[in-house]
Amino acid sequence: MARFVRLSYEIGFRHPGWPGNYTYEWEPVSSIERGDVANFGILHLLDHFGSHLDAPKHFNDAGPAIADVPLERFVYERPMLVDAPKQDRELVSREELEAHDERLRNSDIVMIRTGWSDVRDPDPIRYAAEGPGVSPEACEYLSALPELKAVGLDFISLAAYRKIDPEGILAHQILCGVGRDRYVIIVEDIDLSAYPSNAHRVYAIPLFPEGADSSPCTVFAEMP
Image (cartoon, rainbow, N blue to C red; front, side, top):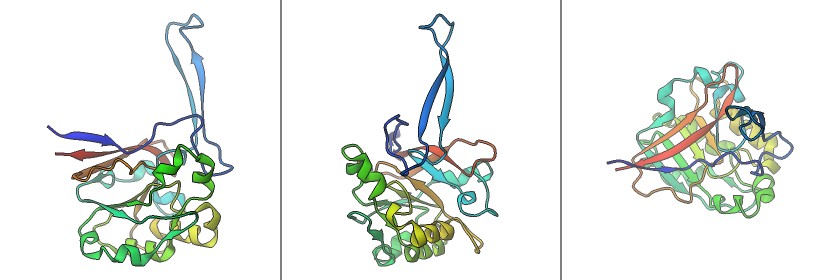
């Protein structure tokens, strides 16, 4: 029987978000405690808060919005984990990824583990504002991998907050397919500290809200 490990975080009121951005609130509408028959409420949730998935529309106005991305782009049969330890504001380089070129060329998702999952809970401010990113050169390499459908990251964004312009913007534009004929899904802010060594399939399942460029998602790995 298959076993599963969740890699995405729960959506928490005090969890880190991109500095200055709206995060998450829950507005109760009906409450059993107040005498109503059931509990329900309204989620006020940024589509880039917590574990989330960037669809091409995020940085590419000609690219598909999240609800228009084909379902098969969210299921990964050949996942690969790459360890690339990073300090504050450092960017994952092309050379670090090219060192695994032979295996990456057969993978449909690469999970880049920098060690920042260990920073998120004890130091959320540092996690959000000082975290690493992926260089534009590395994104050019990833974009050219013929089988690659997605990249998963254990930090808040493909762009390091302190290096958003120009590096972070350009990195997003490359993977979102600006000026090219393919795109790579970006799965941000996931927990790779418990990534199973025998994972043989990964799923990143978003919501499908009409008009949204991206969405929070549930990410989990499947083991035999």
